[in-house]
Image (cartoon, rainbow, N blue to C red; front, side, top):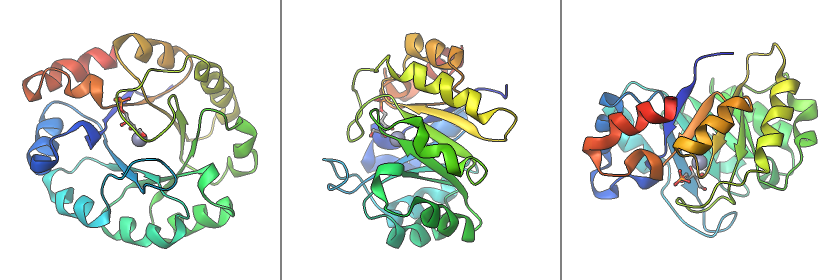
Length: 216
Ligand code: DX5
Ligand code: ZN
């Protein structure tokens, strides 16, 4: 399996100092920057849009891993692609024609990912396995940081790891990932760990230590 990547969620950063915090994450060894976009409709919270993401793009060379919690989503893909997304992940539940949405992401030269809510079965991925480069398993109900990890999602990760087989697809987990649950996720086959609370715990001087702990 490929190297474990840590993708801190900037949802837990200081929004008044996003550029500074992105630089701090970069220096602390973050592999990807996880960008959580919430619309107040698909999820019961609002975060920020493509303009804010674009304004922090130049603060790091690390990949921007954009998690769109937006429905309907198609009208916003171009803006995030142009604002510097490397991966764009959409929810299977958030779009009627998921394949069309995936093709739209790829048309901008951006890598495409699909996220599954905790109750969405893996069968939602079956006809997409040769089209996508990232699968995101939500281990909480999306919308807020700081929630408790759902252990039932570990079986889903193992099942998806088997489905991936030799394909070049990253398996990412998002929600309630901390030192303990990170280990379980890695055992279940995840190779990208998103974490907000566990990365920013203790302030910016702790980022490097927190990231190293998650990596195990
Ligand atoms: C929630 C987001 C997550 C979340 C992770 O909808 O997708 O990225 O902020 O935060 P923690 O690590 O605090 O669960
Ligand atoms: Zn996320």
